[in-house]
Amino acid sequence: MTYILGIETSCDETAASVVLDGKTIVSNIVASQIDLHARYGGVFPELASRAHVEAIGAVVEQAVHDAGIGFDRLDAIAVTRGPGLVGSLLVGVNYAKGLALATGKPLLGVNHLEGHVYSLWLTEPSREIKFPVVILIVSGGHTELLLMEDHGQYERLGGTLDDAAGEAFDKVGRLLGLPFPGGPNIERAAQMGNAVAFRFPRAKRDESYDFSFSGLKTAVMREVIVPSASGDTRSRRADKAPPKLRSDVSISDVAASFQEALASALVDKTVRAAKSYNATEILMAGGVSANQALRQKMRAESSLPVRYPPLHLCTDNAAMIAAAGHYRFQAGLRNKLDMDVKPMWPLTSDAYEK
Image 1 (cartoon, rainbow, N blue to C red):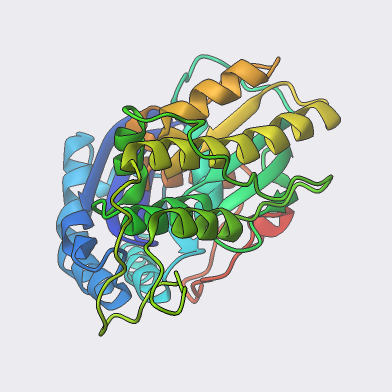
Image 2: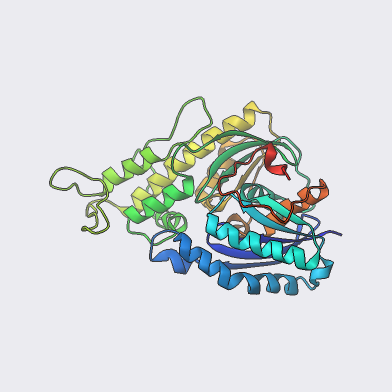
C-alpha cells in the first residue's frame, strides 16, 4: 500500500489530501477562498497568497489526521509545482519542502494540469482506463486538448488562443451582472433560458484543435450593453459609470445561448480529435467539466464513452495531485529540495522531468 500526501495551492484553494495507491481517497480537505475574492470579480493574487499562508498548516494536519495515519506512514509528498499564480505556488512548494526535510519523505513536484487528468483515476477505482484517450481540460485558467498514450505520455493537440473557457464564463457573468464565479451562475440562469435565442459565434471553426473565446465574449457584450453616445459598447474603466444593460434582453436567454456556443466549440473539436486519434474514450476534467450542458452535449455527440469527475473533484483539490504523484512515485521520479515553482508549465511528456 502506498500513501501519498498531496498539497495544492496553485490558485485560490488551499488543499491537502491523502490518497492510497493512486485511486482511493483516504482524506480530502479544501479551504476555499471564493468569498474572499468575490468582491473583486476574480482572484486577487496577493490576497490568495496570504490566505494560503494562514491556512496551509491546519489543512495539511487535518488531512493527515483524517486519514488515520501519521506522517511517518506516508510514502511521499506530492505538491503542485505549476502552472499557477507564482505567490500561491511558492506557499505550497515551500511548505512541502519543509515537510519533506522534516520527515525524510521523497518530494514530488506535480503539474497542476496533470493533476486534473488524474482526477479521473479517482472516480471509478476498479475500472481501468485503456490508452490512448483524448482529454479535454477546461478550467478558469486553462483550456487544453490532449492525447494521452500512457502514464506520463502526453501530446498537446490544441488549446485556447486567448480566454480559457472558465475565464470566458467569469467575464460574461460580470457582463450580465451575475455573482462570481461566473460558471455555476451562468449555468443556473441558463436553465430558464432559450439556448437558440441568440446565434453567438462558435469559436475557431477550422481544422485545428485550437479554441478562441474572445470573439464570443465580444458578441455577448454587443448584445447586452447599451451603446454610449459614441456608439461604443466596450467596458468602461473602473472609475467611470459601469456599462448599462439593455432592458429588453433576457439574461437567461443570453446565458443559455452563450453556454450553448461555448459547449459546441469544445465538443466539436474534442469529438473530432478522439475519432482522428483512435481514442478508446473521452475524458473531461477541470472546473468547467462540472457544467451539465457540456456533459450532456459531449455524451450525445460522442460514440465513445465519456468520463468526467464527480463535482467535488472538478475544481482544484489535492486528491488529484496525490493521485498524479502516485504514478510519478511508481516511475521512480523524485525532486530535489531546491526544486523551484514553474508558473508557466505546459503539460507535455516532459511533465515527468526531475
